Image (cartoon, rainbow, N blue to C red):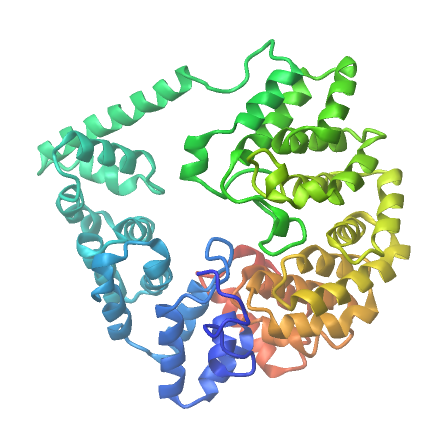
Length: 506
């Protein structure tokens, strides 16, 4: 699921398979011009082996569904993939989620076979919850109601089975099917069981609310820092990397590369918010001491708090933490994950604003280490026109060192567009062509629209077929209409009920 472009799973960008894996508009155009058997094989490979770097952020399902219809591909390959032997042993969403989403779009376009296949997978498949969510927004009541007995049979009438059912009802993305099953007049016992499951879920939620484990009024700064350092073992085990201040930072970025693995960082963001409520001017010496020499997580919390408030000492503390040898030595972190302090320092810098922070960033941006990249990122996001050479230099260094899939490129690419760095256009075109991340490609397209005069008659036309809605919207606003393909494609997008409103408005 998180393939790198240098991995053999991602084909070169100049091949049909590589274009389709990346979700590029040229992938569709080349597939329609290629021998049908070759195009079908490449499409099938993408549906069986999801090529996205992060399936939670990147879109491919509508892109593949449209190509599936253009090629009149049939459903045999998808059915074989869904009901193959692997489905008995691998219940992970990432194995079948893309294929099920494609079926959902095909059903929206009126493909009756796709609808029936989704119903059958709900009854028999391992990833039935995903298929049910697809049906919940597309199928009618008459199609959903008969699925109730098969779904409820998945939960044995035991305390464990009842608890699993209560969790499934509580966490359902779309409650409509469960409501239909509970109100089914032909199956009263089904309604009784679902009513009990809803009560059990509500009672569990009430119990959690009545037993808060976090800070309480009256806690001191020291108590909050100790609570953060202590961590939450249960949360850590359940969600090893889904929380904290770096949740939205792209994997591979300069900040993220220093991020810790499973550990007490899950309380870092919450503890920083608590400090905002309990810390006063008299607590500054204690916070400065924690940010200078405290244990890993407590030091990270203090750094974040001071940076968010623009404390005059924050920048010196960030520089010291980013270059502290102990910050990168697991033996000196008292059990904290390696890189905790260095990562926190870079994260704290990204939260700073104001003249002093920008002036210091201009000094640091010339460095060729993580602090230099973080400083250039701050300038890319909040700097002035005079910072364009520093942002361009950082962009060149990052592409050279990390390649076109490096997460640190995201804000630098945005900054090149925001600052209209025209000399960055060749680099941006390289990133556009080569990256396997459709999100980064969309950012490159937006930056090219601001820096490359040839964009309107070049990449903008291809972007009309891109897999990302935001990229198609950029294309709709910039593509030169002198090309007959552009006018026809714009008409089709405007009339397509599956297209997003932003694209149609553009």
